[in-house]
Image (cartoon, rainbow, N blue to C red; front, side, top):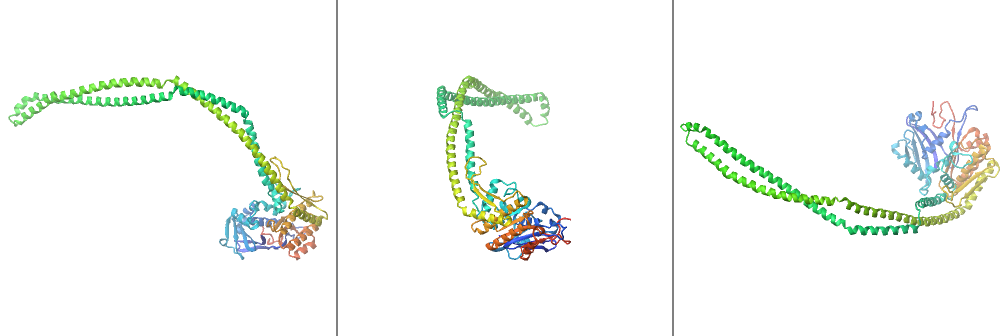
Length: 592
């Protein structure tokens, strides 16, 4: 990816506030100027410019920008014109919606974001990664290397280290090897096998502590327990209690059901008997009521002169009817009652017999001594089976120990084979490593007129330590007096420039075409900076690709060198304090 042009657009003012065009090949100097010797060049926006480039390339925006009232009120859109695979496009981040990323696949920019492809932050980062690294480097993310190719002096340079503070050592060495186009996955692959070996060793250690007896001792105990189980089962089967118990239980259930039926029948018969008795009582009561009419017979005689003979006839008929009913139907109901009493007596006899039978059956079923004996034998048998199961587990653990040992031996053999393969692979890079060493020495001689050391080693010492570094590609650089603050920073710069120039020359390597150093030159000799910058610019133009961005203050270069860089267009941004603040990076002051 080539970075072509950075712009600041304000939606509030509906105009572009500042535009910065970059050299598509060579050095791009972001310069902080002073109005006079007493003025300060810091705070004009050099670092802000680098942070915005990083933000456009997928880094999280600094919280300062998200909460800056001036930026929010102006509605700032940062855009970056890029060329990837010979196609121009635009990347954009809107300060007011930092969780979104925007891409415009067009040669001409427009500021209506509805015309852009809008991505959530995660998807936007994936798009940037694909454009910079392509699809092949699935095990290296652009996010993991971004801080190494956009170096910040405050966080990205550590004394006596080529890496970045607080990074995992395995990952850091992997990234440094990747940037140098060296084999970078050897340590990860070997460490994966070592981890499996150590996991198996831990399991083996745990199993060993749980096994207290030998296989022979365990098998002897198992045989003994089996013999005891056979004896118990023989005793249990001889009693055959299950069959007897089940039969008695069935009989008890049947008799209980019969008793319930008899009790229901007795209830019905008693109810019918009570009904018959009530019928007889009703008939007697009616006769008594008719007989009470005899007391008014004189009254009937007086009425005979007034009423027809039917009155007397009706009285006689009713009286005769109830006399008949008491005499005949009463006898009928009494007969029915007698029959019911006989049935009730018979049922009571059967009921009494069933109750006695059920009582005896209940006593048998509740014979606890017999059941306890059987249950005790069954419990002993189950306890022995449990012991056998435990023995089987321990025997299985013995087998697992053998399997683990075999597996560990296989993994160790695989690790040795893989380590040898990775060693051979590393050795095949001998000429490439020589070219890296030569390039670093060229830079060190150019800067300090002395040979620097660029050393690359492959760690092939195999061991089982959890922190083993087998397979690690270790890269170390040194300069005479690199304990000096300025020389140490130059060493780190020269390391970065070494892998960068080498990768541009190597078409088989990664596809990173730009390197950015923010404040990375820390007060070395001004002439040294100029010599390095001129050399890098020359190399990039010879290779015909690559961009090197660096932030500088005006007083860090000699006037003659500064004039040279300005005349040849290497200074792409001149940032300074002015009364109207238009020459600051954003074109305005971020704070009051």
